[in-house]
Image (cartoon, rainbow, N blue to C red; front, side, top):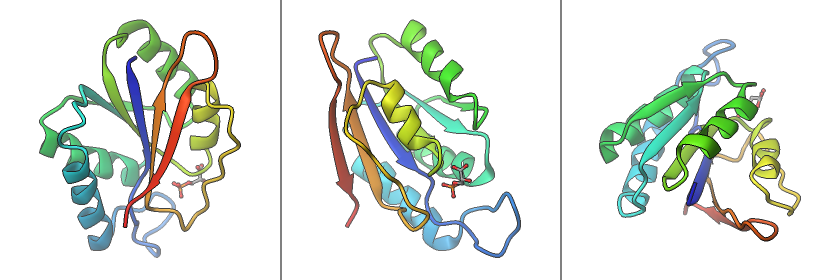
Length: 143
Ligand SMILES: O=C(O)[C@H](O)COP(=O)(O)O
């Protein structure tokens, strides 16, 4: 894949159980991510299997008019292998969870140590893979 954008889901309803949906603040943030990314030429989006990531991804995919796929939250290794094999020329967006984003970044060739806390809803990571060494990596924060 050409470039990989990676975000965590937006704000969730904190009191709505083990698999919460987005709060209204979260739905607004997801729409802002879509605005930020409207000229990023994203071809396809992958969201992990939790409701909060699916909702974040659906809002963005619908706004950008791109296809969206779901992957098992802990099946990110398979998802990344599939992307590497099948989306060689694509720019992709992955919507993940705080516990799995650092590992996904490592698998994507990022050598910097990255921590994502439970209060981080504003991260946009950009990874540009490099055949000859570590991936280029940028961590942005949504204002
Ligand atoms: O598995 C995880 O990554 C965490 O349990 C949940 O992370 P999240 O709050 O980003 O969904």
